[in-house]
Amino acid sequence: MKLLRVISGLFVMATVGCASNGSDVSIPLEGTNTAVVRVSVATGTGKPKVSEDTVIVKTGQRVVWVGPQEFMIEFPQGTPFSRSKFSTDDAVINLVVPRNENARAENIKKTKYKYDVVVKGERLDPHMVVIEQ
Image (cartoon, rainbow, N blue to C red; front, side):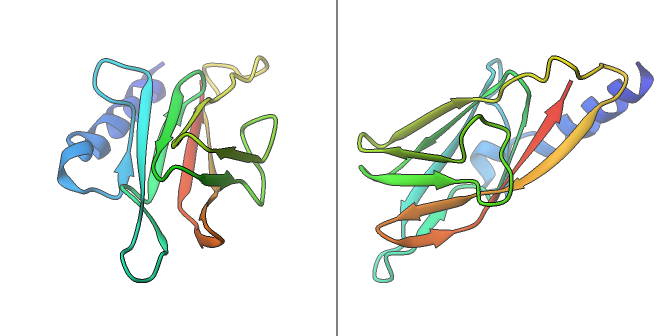
């Protein structure tokens, strides 16, 4: 239990104010279970950009990617979801990180996943950290 409090404290300290200060980390919005990642496209190059390079969520929480009308999220080397590719034609991808029914509270596990944001064939490779609890 003490380890859980320490990890939770570090999690909060590392992420306070991230949504507004251009930090490299996104977490669920205050008072919610939803983390938002904004996807944009660089003028001139057409390369995708994300508001934060890493999104940190716990199992059971939601990640919403918002951006151009059409884009994709792909997990090429492992995924916390049942599929590895997600696409949209309405500017939003909305996913809930599934809970691991076999996980135990005293065995907190953090897994880092690389994912690709793909817009018109151009790729960017940010990360997602999933905390199993």
